[in-house]
Length: 389
Image (cartoon, rainbow, N blue to C red):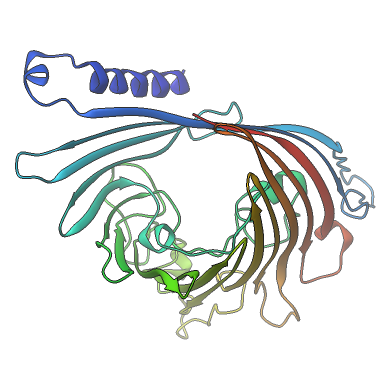
């Protein structure tokens, strides 16, 4: 019922913007409204390691995974834009996740206000550090970032690396204020402030004191795009900080991270690299001043590297990517939890807005320990068709 109400409300809002519902709206200049979207359907074969699906001992559970699956990824976007009497540009965006398996129907809702000062965004969309990030090129049916790796090769619960691990920072869609400057000599700057990154309710954020359960976030970013001779060059740098952890026992901690990215296009080839490092500092609350949480299960310490190369000729793109993320889990235990991926992807345009996609991806989820049930690796072969409209 809740999903139906969300979808109905969004469609009614889009109809009102497009058609107008009052005399006062009809008398003014109507906003320009557009509807766009995408749909990707894929089928694939994926095989996890036998040790991960085997457990021993009395009363333990055994999970076996099918080697075949069909997956879809679809969105519908409603956008409206107009200009005020003073010349400012106003935009509205509503992004709907439309897959049956999606638990969050509204992916993003925001308003933009643009002019000579740049563009302000009020609402739920990615932070400036993610919006301006430069990443290694990729192509195919499975993304190098995001949750695709987890949906084909399951992550063991003991591995601390996120199922949506990537090389960007500040990518979450919580409500925020974001500013992105106009481009000057190829440089673009941006910044964001999120009052409450741990909740999407309308309550005032409880991000202070020992009992605070919410956390605010700030970030800044800088991007350059230009040419070096005949080659196109792009680079970015972003910094991101969270004021405190959400658990009351770690209310005095803070998390900071930075990301760097660069890419260059030389004829048919594009080469890119991305790097991210996240560090949590502070101490737990205790009678003796607490203990440091750096390098423990309570920290978000992470290091990510991504390298990719793509070749494009006419309607065909091939891309090879390497991705690795490492996270500390427990002080005193040698090693880190990690995620390592190799991806070979292809895209072939087969019509206007219609692409055939194919990917071979090898994934390794590694725990600090060597218990087979806490580690998994496998290879996925996935192909399908993506449509944009």
